[in-house]
Length: 375
Image: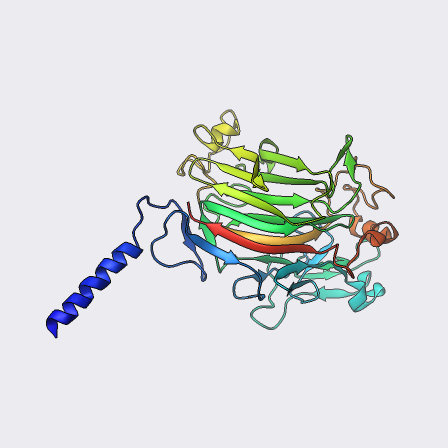
C-alpha cells in the first residue's frame, strides 16, 4: 500500500511538473477573479470571451453621469436595452433618456444614479457623476449607453490581445476599446498610462482637411505624461482609413504588448509601434522640464509596465473628440467651447437623429469576441 501511494505521488509530481513548466518563461502576469491559475506559458490563452452569455461576474457596468472626463452626452447604466448579448455578439446600443422619463425631465428633473444593490452603485462621482439636476441651459445627459470593464475580474501585464468588432454608424457616436491601469502605480491619469486600442467616430461623412475621420477611420493612442498638462498622446497617436468604412463589417483590433514595445494592428496589419530606446521620460523629452519623473523606479516601459484592465464602451459627443473644424452634412449642433454643449446637442437632434438606426442595429457597437494570450 505504501509503495502504491508513493508511485501515485511520483506520477502526480511528474505530471504536475510537465503541465506547469515552460521552455521559455512568460513575461505575462495576471490578476482578478477570472485570472488563470498556475504557471503561465507563452501562447497560453489567459482570457477569452465569446459572448455566448452576458456574464456580469466578468463584465461590470460603469454607472455614472460623469461624461468620461470629456463632458460627453451619455449616461452609463446597467440596462439590457443598452447592453445585451444576442446570438453570440455583444451589443452596446444608444437610446434617448427622454423616451424613459419624458423630454421635460431633461431640463428640470433630478437624476441620482446610485441604486440600493451592490451592483447599482455610482462608479464615478467626478463632474457631478452621481447626482445631477437638469436646467434649460444645462440639461441632463440626453443619451443612455453602456461602458463595461474587467476592473475586478481580470487585469494583466504584457500579452497579445485580439478583439473582433464592428463599429456603429450614426453621427457623433464614439465607440472605444481601451485599457486603464488597475492600481495607478505611478499616480493619477495620465501618469500611470492609458492604452486606447480602438476609437472611431460614427459619422459617415465627417471630414477634416479632406480626410474622412468618421466611419472610414480608426485610431489608436497611448496616453502618458507626468500630469494632465504634459500628456504626450500626440506623440503616440496613429490612424488607419478604410474606404468602405469599419462599420460595414467585423475587423480584428490587435494589441501586442511586451517589455520592449507596444504595437497595434488592424486585421493583422501593424499600424502603430512604440518602443522607447531607454524610457518614456526621455521619449517624451521631459528632461528639461522642472518636474519629477514618476517612472524612475519602473522599467523602460513605465508607465506601461503594470497590470491594465479592459474597457468597452460607446460614448456620444463631448467637448474634445469631435473637432469643431471638421465638416459634416447638416453641421455640428454644438461647439466644444460652448457652456451649454449638451443642450445644444439635444436641440440639434433633427440633424443627428435620422442618422441613427437602432431598429436595424446599425448604430450598435457590436463585439464578436475578446481573446488575450500570454507572451
